[in-house]
Amino acid sequence: MKARLYKKYIDQVAPALKEKHQYANPHQIPRMEKIVVNMGVSASMEKSALDDAAKDLALITGRKPAISKSRHSIANFKLRKGQPIGCHVTLRRDVMYEFFDRLIATALPRIRDFRGLSTRSFDGRGNYSLGVADQTIFPEIDLDKVKHQQGMDITIVTSAPTNEEAIDLLKLMGLPFAEGR
Image (cartoon, rainbow, N blue to C red; front, side):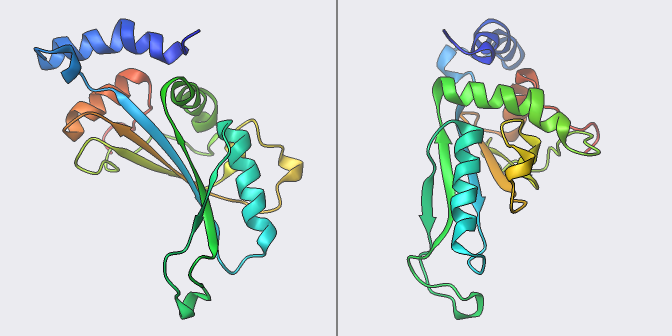
C-alpha cells in the first residue's frame, strides 16, 4: 500500500504543478527525491551520547542510522581523525513519504511557539533544510528515557531546478511555511 502523501502527490500536487508552471513533459514536474536526517554529537560528550542519538534516530525514522566519523584531527575541539561524531539516515520512496507525513502532521505542531517554517532555508537548487532543536517533538521518543536533549538537521532533496518551484511543491505537499518570512 502506497503512502498517503504519495497518493496526494499523484492525484493533486503533480497536476496542480503541471498546470501552474506549464510543464510539457511529466518528468519535468518536481518531486521529492530523498530526505536526509542528521544528528551531530559533540566529540567532548561521553561515548553513550552517540549510542543514544543513534537509538533515537532509529526510533524516529524506522531505519538503522549510519555512523559519521571525523575526517580530520582538530586539536582545539579535542577531535581525532576517525572518531565517531554523529549519525545520519537517508530515506527514499515510501519510507520518505511516511516520515514526511509524520513530520508535518505530528512533529512540527508540537514545537513550542511554532508559527511556520522560514522560506529562506533553500539552497538555490530546490533543496530545503530545517533544524529541529529537540528530538522529543517526535511522539516515538519516550521522554523518560531521554538523557541528552539532541537536535537534528532534516534536508528535503527535490528535483526542482529553482527555489520557487520547490516552494510550490512543498506548500502543496503540506509543509507549513510562515507567511511573510
